[in-house]
Image 1 (spheres, rainbow, N blue to C red):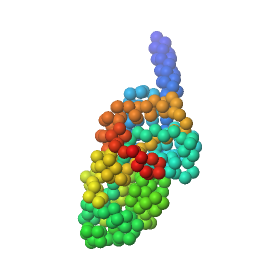
Image 2 (cartoon, one colour):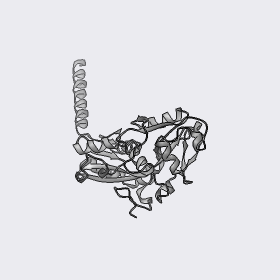
Image 3 (cartoon, helix red, strand yellow):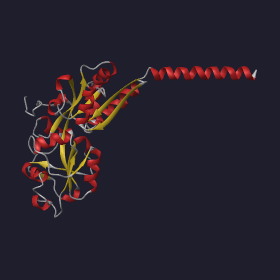
Image 4 (tube, rainbow, N blue to C red):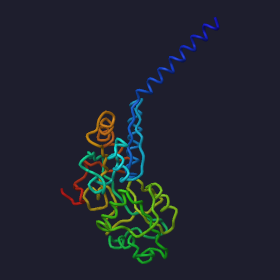
Length: 285
Protein backbone atom coordinates (compact mmCIF):
# COMPACT_ATOMS: atom_id res chain seq x y z
CA UNK A 1 0.00 0.00 0.00
CA UNK A 2 2.80 2.42 0.91
CA UNK A 3 4.53 1.66 -2.36
CA UNK A 4 1.37 2.44 -4.33
CA UNK A 5 0.86 5.70 -2.41
CA UNK A 6 4.48 6.71 -3.03
CA UNK A 7 4.03 5.97 -6.72
CA UNK A 8 0.92 8.14 -6.91
CA UNK A 9 2.67 11.01 -5.11
CA UNK A 10 5.64 10.73 -7.49
CA UNK A 11 3.36 10.78 -10.54
CA UNK A 12 1.43 13.79 -9.21
CA UNK A 13 4.72 15.57 -8.50
CA UNK A 14 5.96 14.97 -12.02
CA UNK A 15 2.66 16.16 -13.48
CA UNK A 16 2.86 19.31 -11.32
CA UNK A 17 6.41 20.05 -12.43
CA UNK A 18 5.46 19.41 -16.03
CA UNK A 19 2.51 21.78 -15.69
CA UNK A 20 4.71 24.46 -14.11
CA UNK A 21 7.31 24.09 -16.83
CA UNK A 22 4.57 24.38 -19.44
CA UNK A 23 3.30 27.61 -17.79
CA UNK A 24 6.83 29.03 -17.71
CA UNK A 25 7.35 28.15 -21.38
CA UNK A 26 4.21 30.10 -22.24
CA UNK A 27 5.46 33.20 -20.41
CA UNK A 28 6.28 36.33 -22.39
CA UNK A 29 8.94 38.93 -21.75
CA UNK A 30 10.20 42.16 -23.27
CA UNK A 31 13.14 44.40 -22.44
CA UNK A 32 13.20 48.20 -22.33
CA UNK A 33 16.62 49.89 -22.07
CA UNK A 34 17.85 53.47 -21.97
CA UNK A 35 16.98 56.76 -20.27
CA UNK A 36 17.51 56.76 -16.51
CA UNK A 37 15.14 59.75 -16.29
CA UNK A 38 12.35 57.57 -17.70
CA UNK A 39 13.41 54.40 -15.90
CA UNK A 40 11.37 54.90 -12.67
CA UNK A 41 8.14 55.34 -14.64
CA UNK A 42 8.69 52.33 -16.91
CA UNK A 43 9.75 50.18 -13.95
CA UNK A 44 6.65 51.08 -11.94
CA UNK A 45 4.33 50.64 -14.92
CA UNK A 46 6.02 47.33 -15.73
CA UNK A 47 5.47 46.07 -12.18
CA UNK A 48 1.80 47.03 -12.29
CA UNK A 49 1.32 45.49 -15.72
CA UNK A 50 2.99 42.20 -14.85
CA UNK A 51 1.04 42.07 -11.60
CA UNK A 52 -2.17 42.09 -13.64
CA UNK A 53 -0.84 39.66 -16.25
CA UNK A 54 0.70 36.50 -14.72
CA UNK A 55 3.40 34.94 -16.87
CA UNK A 56 4.45 38.29 -18.36
CA UNK A 57 7.72 40.03 -17.49
CA UNK A 58 8.88 43.53 -18.40
CA UNK A 59 12.63 43.90 -17.89
CA UNK A 60 13.70 47.55 -17.49
CA UNK A 61 17.32 48.75 -17.55
CA UNK A 62 19.04 52.14 -17.60
CA UNK A 63 22.24 53.02 -19.44
CA UNK A 64 21.24 56.35 -20.98
CA UNK A 65 19.26 57.44 -24.02
CA UNK A 66 22.09 56.73 -26.45
CA UNK A 67 22.24 53.13 -25.28
CA UNK A 68 18.48 52.76 -25.56
CA UNK A 69 18.41 54.07 -29.12
CA UNK A 70 21.36 51.99 -30.31
CA UNK A 71 20.06 48.82 -28.64
CA UNK A 72 16.57 49.06 -30.12
CA UNK A 73 18.00 49.95 -33.53
CA UNK A 74 20.16 46.82 -33.49
CA UNK A 75 17.21 44.67 -32.46
CA UNK A 76 18.82 43.69 -29.16
CA UNK A 77 15.81 44.94 -27.18
CA UNK A 78 12.15 45.56 -27.91
CA UNK A 79 12.01 49.13 -26.56
CA UNK A 80 14.57 51.92 -26.41
CA UNK A 81 13.80 54.57 -23.78
CA UNK A 82 15.07 58.04 -24.64
CA UNK A 83 14.87 61.68 -23.54
CA UNK A 84 15.99 62.59 -27.06
CA UNK A 85 14.35 62.41 -30.45
CA UNK A 86 16.08 59.69 -32.46
CA UNK A 87 16.90 62.39 -35.03
CA UNK A 88 19.12 64.11 -32.44
CA UNK A 89 21.45 61.16 -31.98
CA UNK A 90 24.26 60.51 -34.45
CA UNK A 91 24.46 56.96 -35.75
CA UNK A 92 20.74 56.40 -35.36
CA UNK A 93 18.51 55.90 -38.40
CA UNK A 94 15.33 57.56 -37.13
CA UNK A 95 13.44 56.40 -40.22
CA UNK A 96 13.59 52.81 -39.00
CA UNK A 97 12.31 53.60 -35.52
CA UNK A 98 8.79 54.41 -34.34
CA UNK A 99 8.39 57.06 -31.64
CA UNK A 100 5.95 56.53 -28.77
CA UNK A 101 5.84 59.63 -26.55
CA UNK A 102 4.61 58.63 -23.10
CA UNK A 103 5.33 61.68 -20.91
CA UNK A 104 7.20 64.93 -20.47
CA UNK A 105 9.96 65.47 -17.93
CA UNK A 106 11.28 68.72 -16.53
CA UNK A 107 14.99 68.93 -15.73
CA UNK A 108 16.34 71.18 -13.01
CA UNK A 109 19.74 72.24 -11.70
CA UNK A 110 20.32 70.87 -8.19
CA UNK A 111 22.87 72.06 -5.65
CA UNK A 112 24.13 70.92 -2.31
CA UNK A 113 22.63 72.87 0.59
CA UNK A 114 26.08 74.21 1.52
CA UNK A 115 26.28 76.23 -1.73
CA UNK A 116 24.06 78.92 -0.25
CA UNK A 117 22.09 79.70 -3.40
CA UNK A 118 18.52 79.11 -4.55
CA UNK A 119 18.43 81.12 -7.76
CA UNK A 120 20.65 82.08 -10.69
CA UNK A 121 20.30 83.91 -13.95
CA UNK A 122 20.62 81.81 -17.10
CA UNK A 123 23.88 83.63 -17.80
CA UNK A 124 25.26 82.72 -14.36
CA UNK A 125 24.18 79.09 -14.71
CA UNK A 126 25.86 78.93 -18.11
CA UNK A 127 29.10 80.34 -16.72
CA UNK A 128 29.06 77.85 -13.85
CA UNK A 129 28.82 74.90 -16.24
CA UNK A 130 31.38 76.36 -18.61
CA UNK A 131 33.81 76.59 -15.70
CA UNK A 132 34.04 80.37 -15.81
CA UNK A 133 32.67 80.72 -12.26
CA UNK A 134 34.71 78.74 -9.73
CA UNK A 135 33.29 79.80 -6.36
CA UNK A 136 29.69 80.21 -5.21
CA UNK A 137 30.46 83.63 -3.70
CA UNK A 138 30.87 84.95 -7.27
CA UNK A 139 27.13 84.46 -7.84
CA UNK A 140 25.82 85.39 -4.40
CA UNK A 141 26.42 82.15 -2.53
CA UNK A 142 28.85 81.03 0.16
CA UNK A 143 32.62 81.16 -0.08
CA UNK A 144 32.87 77.58 -1.29
CA UNK A 145 34.42 76.02 -4.37
CA UNK A 146 31.98 74.83 -7.02
CA UNK A 147 32.07 71.10 -7.70
CA UNK A 148 30.66 70.31 -11.14
CA UNK A 149 29.01 66.96 -11.83
CA UNK A 150 27.72 65.91 -15.24
CA UNK A 151 25.85 62.96 -16.64
CA UNK A 152 27.92 60.80 -18.98
CA UNK A 153 28.10 61.20 -22.74
CA UNK A 154 25.07 59.59 -24.34
CA UNK A 155 22.74 60.79 -21.60
CA UNK A 156 19.58 62.41 -22.91
CA UNK A 157 19.27 64.41 -19.71
CA UNK A 158 22.71 65.88 -20.32
CA UNK A 159 21.95 66.73 -23.95
CA UNK A 160 18.67 68.39 -23.00
CA UNK A 161 20.36 70.42 -20.26
CA UNK A 162 23.31 71.49 -22.41
CA UNK A 163 21.13 72.44 -25.37
CA UNK A 164 18.84 74.57 -23.21
CA UNK A 165 21.49 76.17 -21.00
CA UNK A 166 24.73 76.23 -22.99
CA UNK A 167 23.42 76.18 -26.54
CA UNK A 168 23.40 73.58 -29.32
CA UNK A 169 26.75 71.87 -29.75
CA UNK A 170 28.29 73.39 -26.60
CA UNK A 171 29.48 71.00 -23.90
CA UNK A 172 30.01 71.63 -20.22
CA UNK A 173 33.45 72.02 -18.66
CA UNK A 174 35.31 68.82 -17.90
CA UNK A 175 34.10 67.28 -14.66
CA UNK A 176 33.24 64.05 -12.92
CA UNK A 177 30.57 62.14 -14.87
CA UNK A 178 27.98 59.61 -13.79
CA UNK A 179 25.80 57.19 -15.77
CA UNK A 180 22.91 57.23 -13.30
CA UNK A 181 20.57 60.04 -12.26
CA UNK A 182 20.24 58.36 -8.88
CA UNK A 183 23.99 58.47 -8.36
CA UNK A 184 24.12 62.13 -9.44
CA UNK A 185 21.49 62.97 -6.84
CA UNK A 186 23.40 61.13 -4.11
CA UNK A 187 26.75 62.74 -4.92
CA UNK A 188 25.29 66.27 -4.99
CA UNK A 189 23.55 65.58 -1.70
CA UNK A 190 26.79 64.39 -0.06
CA UNK A 191 29.27 66.88 -1.59
CA UNK A 192 29.39 70.47 -0.25
CA UNK A 193 29.46 72.92 -3.16
CA UNK A 194 28.28 70.37 -5.73
CA UNK A 195 25.94 71.20 -8.63
CA UNK A 196 24.38 69.04 -11.32
CA UNK A 197 20.97 68.46 -12.90
CA UNK A 198 18.28 65.79 -12.75
CA UNK A 199 14.74 65.15 -13.89
CA UNK A 200 12.05 66.51 -11.57
CA UNK A 201 11.21 62.90 -10.67
CA UNK A 202 14.60 62.54 -8.93
CA UNK A 203 14.32 65.67 -6.73
CA UNK A 204 14.23 65.10 -2.97
CA UNK A 205 14.06 67.37 0.09
CA UNK A 206 17.79 66.85 0.68
CA UNK A 207 18.62 69.01 -2.35
CA UNK A 208 18.15 72.62 -3.40
CA UNK A 209 16.51 73.18 -6.78
CA UNK A 210 17.60 76.36 -8.54
CA UNK A 211 15.20 78.85 -10.11
CA UNK A 212 16.42 80.56 -13.28
CA UNK A 213 15.70 84.19 -14.12
CA UNK A 214 13.00 84.16 -11.46
CA UNK A 215 11.22 81.12 -12.94
CA UNK A 216 10.78 78.10 -10.69
CA UNK A 217 11.18 74.52 -11.97
CA UNK A 218 7.53 73.43 -11.74
CA UNK A 219 5.27 71.27 -13.87
CA UNK A 220 3.05 74.27 -14.66
CA UNK A 221 6.00 76.30 -15.94
CA UNK A 222 7.11 73.38 -18.11
CA UNK A 223 3.68 73.08 -19.75
CA UNK A 224 3.90 76.70 -20.98
CA UNK A 225 7.62 76.54 -21.80
CA UNK A 226 8.34 79.28 -19.25
CA UNK A 227 10.71 76.68 -17.79
CA UNK A 228 12.69 75.74 -20.88
CA UNK A 229 14.70 72.73 -19.69
CA UNK A 230 12.41 69.83 -20.52
CA UNK A 231 12.06 66.95 -22.89
CA UNK A 232 9.62 64.32 -24.06
CA UNK A 233 10.01 60.82 -22.76
CA UNK A 234 10.14 58.55 -25.80
CA UNK A 235 9.80 54.78 -26.00
CA UNK A 236 11.12 53.75 -29.42
CA UNK A 237 10.46 50.51 -31.26
CA UNK A 238 12.09 49.15 -34.41
CA UNK A 239 9.10 49.29 -36.72
CA UNK A 240 5.54 49.04 -35.47
CA UNK A 241 5.28 47.21 -32.13
CA UNK A 242 3.81 43.73 -32.00
CA UNK A 243 2.41 41.33 -29.40
CA UNK A 244 3.45 42.08 -25.81
CA UNK A 245 5.43 45.18 -26.84
CA UNK A 246 2.30 46.74 -28.34
CA UNK A 247 0.18 45.77 -25.35
CA UNK A 248 2.62 47.30 -22.92
CA UNK A 249 2.97 50.53 -24.91
CA UNK A 250 -0.83 50.77 -25.09
CA UNK A 251 -0.83 50.41 -21.31
CA UNK A 252 1.75 53.22 -20.99
CA UNK A 253 -0.66 55.59 -22.74
CA UNK A 254 -3.76 54.35 -20.91
CA UNK A 255 -5.55 56.30 -18.19
CA UNK A 256 -4.12 53.91 -15.58
CA UNK A 257 -0.67 55.34 -16.23
CA UNK A 258 -1.38 58.79 -17.68
CA UNK A 259 -3.83 59.98 -15.03
CA UNK A 260 -2.27 58.43 -11.94
CA UNK A 261 1.21 56.93 -12.10
CA UNK A 262 2.80 59.67 -14.20
CA UNK A 263 1.90 62.44 -11.75
CA UNK A 264 2.67 60.32 -8.70
CA UNK A 265 6.23 59.82 -9.95
CA UNK A 266 6.89 63.44 -10.91
CA UNK A 267 6.30 63.35 -14.66
CA UNK A 268 3.92 65.44 -16.77
CA UNK A 269 1.22 63.95 -19.01
CA UNK A 270 1.63 65.03 -22.63
CA UNK A 271 -2.05 66.01 -22.66
CA UNK A 272 -1.27 68.87 -20.25
CA UNK A 273 1.34 70.50 -22.48
CA UNK A 274 0.32 73.88 -23.93
CA UNK A 275 3.24 73.83 -26.38
CA UNK A 276 4.90 71.32 -28.67
CA UNK A 277 8.59 70.88 -29.42
CA UNK A 278 10.11 69.36 -32.56
CA UNK A 279 13.33 67.38 -32.97
CA UNK A 280 15.35 70.55 -33.50
CA UNK A 281 14.17 71.93 -30.18
CA UNK A 282 11.95 74.59 -31.75
CA UNK A 283 8.57 75.31 -30.22
CA UNK A 284 6.02 74.65 -32.96
CA UNK A 285 2.75 75.19 -31.12
